[in-house]
View 1 (cartoon, rainbow over the protein chains, first blue to last red):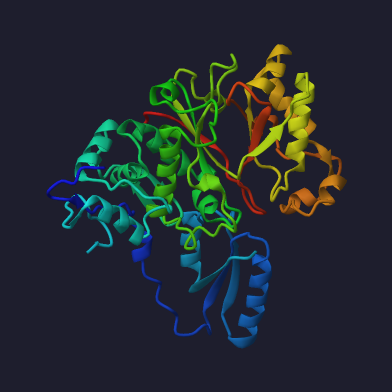
View 2 (view 1 turned 90 degrees about the vertical axis):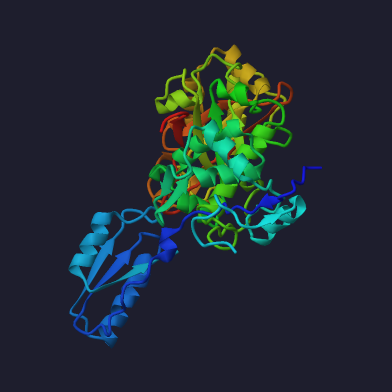
Length: 100
Length: 348
């Protein structure tokens, strides 16, 4: 039986720091009319199909200034910071598709 | 009572031993088995053993930018039942797994349910008593059991790969509790696994390999290198791949290895033979429903399960009796693969 010290066993937290959890979402645009919208393909199978459909719906239902398509280099690794910066620079909003 | 971030060096609450064990269950911080409740004294010992400070960052998970600090590695290692001297192996395993080639987030989250195996090589294997013989994939050895378990607890508690949260394994596999093995370098004069990654034989090293459950290949009749390796190759072809083009680890046991060594074959010869013997026609692969990666559904001629002979990772190990070798298939999907990564022990 393990020793039970008079002061007991302290509780310690093995969990990690998660800076991602404390990030907030970017401000939502008030509308999509006149905006440049990025559609970002994460390269998973069918992501392109999902974005094709979304592109059609966006064009039919709102009047974005432009829809621009981007693609990650692979599905499972993060987008390169340069791509994220480029999208942020060129567009007013972005949609990332995760197909399967 | 528990702050979201930071903490623990100055714990406010104390419990008796059994309350503490239950507390970690209640907080969802275990793999389903009891953990050793860590204490500040333990933590100091584990950090000292690897000459680390609590805030030293062992690696950063690129998806989510999650830092893995020495303190959190040590706490989870303690909880897993490790000894302090196991810390350098665990830290090196983490350093290997955060390499983008390994694709840690995908392998931890994937529905296909990979385990995260460490293969340890060098003098450290004997120093720590890591089992590379009888029952090397089974229970009974503290170093194997607890080092692998520490990796899993770190993935869950630090990296967020909690079952049903980030880890969406359809079935999972028992190797997700623990998976740490070693080469038996005394069995051959072949250059050990780490040298395939450019690490000198004189250095201790850890290979991280994201893989599915081992498949045992029984062969008690073959009497030549060609026969026994053909048997293994046929089993490798028969495996229901989600994505061919992956890496295949082959654990060659002494009984099978003996045929290969008697024939004077080198490790390269084995890799070449397995690569050649796992080639099949594209018509054959197209006839199977399992190979998901689209590019492998197209083309003509022959195609294999691995792209090059080097993608067969050869690990001599196992008990001296019994014709039961095994192979393990690395994680891969329609869109990507995890590549094994090897790091020498003792680098900052």
